[in-house]
Length: 201
Length: 288
Image 1 (cartoon, one colour):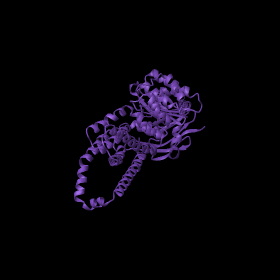
Image 2 (image 1 turned 180 degrees about the horizontal axis):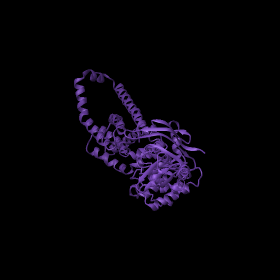
Image 3 (image 1 turned 120 degrees about the vertical axis):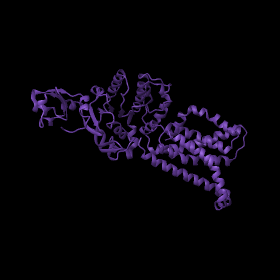
Image 4 (image 1 turned 180 degrees about the vertical axis):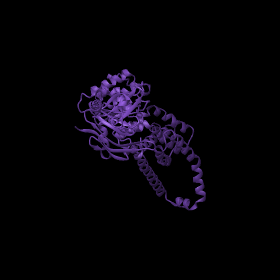
């Protein structure tokens, strides 16, 4: 299964050359470090889907001695591995450019990436090839456009929830967030697995 | 004799098409040609053989094993070649090998490079720059480099020029020198099969019409030509399909001996080619 994860690098050799300029763009534009971590993490896993949405790729992978469970597991584990690598590289680049960032930025970047992955990965196996990229792009834009507004709305109108969150200690807030994200990611993994098992190739 | 592939009463339904009650055995150590018109259900059957599709009803076993429990063990022993290129088209042969090779326990680099040399394939050029024939050779080189016991090919000769088709058939013949190998391939170019097939499996409108040795097919099936007045309700029973013209009839039988007994020398009996059989059965199988 490690081979399936390694495959992404072989496939994206050329695109990886773009990786550094890609992060640099966000750094030079003065984007928030958390946002830079997020887009850097998205780079490899979502690029892979550009290949994997093709029917032929699924036929190839399924004709090789891999089970469907392994193929999906490689997607979800691969996303985490590439996220860690991307964060390492991004942190180094930020250091080199002398841009300050905190562990909180990394945590927020990671958390958002995992949530985004959890919501979009199943879509790749539900929608027909060709429709997925627009769908994901729209999701991403909508989330970034409406997301903050929703949060602001909630903080203003749902005092019970905000009070609850504000009163949490930093530790329990972090633990709670980590746990919820892990649960959402695991549910997404299970769901995608079920969808893929039933998929006709 | 052992069966490498066994379909027992396999049915798969789609919205507007279905494959029904397939009982198919592929014998070890032989070449089985899988024929049928476009849309007869060949690709669906091959996809089920590769576990890309799962049957609604029935059982599929490869090497006596079930896909539910032994998916990886089964696929380790299969080499596959599909009609189109399934490899990442932007990659070169070297990178494709890097992706495919680690998937197999018995991948053999030496064999792979032998085929690369034999087929004169460039290692550093993207697959998409290959001609159709070269892509076919590339798929074949990959399919043959992990000592597969069963080679499954879906329309490997489609879109190839006659010279390359013959070359391919030569390669397949060479493969069969190793007595354990089994080749199963679908085609609608029936002349390919006269050269190398030992068995013929014939699909028609989602059903398996027959699966016989090429010798039995030649012996049992025949094209019969004669005067129209020889036909009546009883004599027609010997035929699967009758084509009437003002000058006489042409009919297909799957029982040459019976036709000889009924008509004697009053009709002309010729060997039926696979194409004749496909043509006469195009409306489905029902005795007239």
